Length: 145
Image (tube, rainbow, N blue to C red; front, side, top):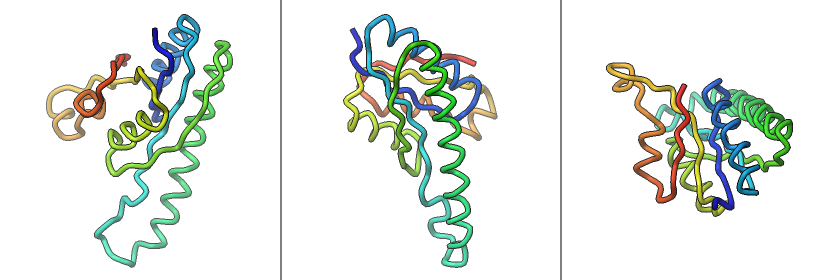
């Protein structure tokens, strides 16, 4: 039914629940799996040239976090008997990076976690999952915290 599953991760326990769900689906349908971590490559845009050094430190730390999250997800999938590709995507907003990865991989399903924030916390922090649902045209399986 699903040929290619895209699994965005952020290193959280909730995203690892999504990885586990994607593993089960991939085994059931024989799907390819791509695990994605999105980094904002220019978080200091508009702040000024004085932050160039901070930018380099940020990218080093962000890449290390991305690699750690992707390695953990790939290991979880491997332990479940599913091989996966990993991708570090870029986007000022996470949903932009997910949309780009969706197009480049040709995935026909997204499996992602949701932290289930409500009230003022959701209003202040927003909902990546909600934004993805509005931005993509493939099914999205939301795994709750």
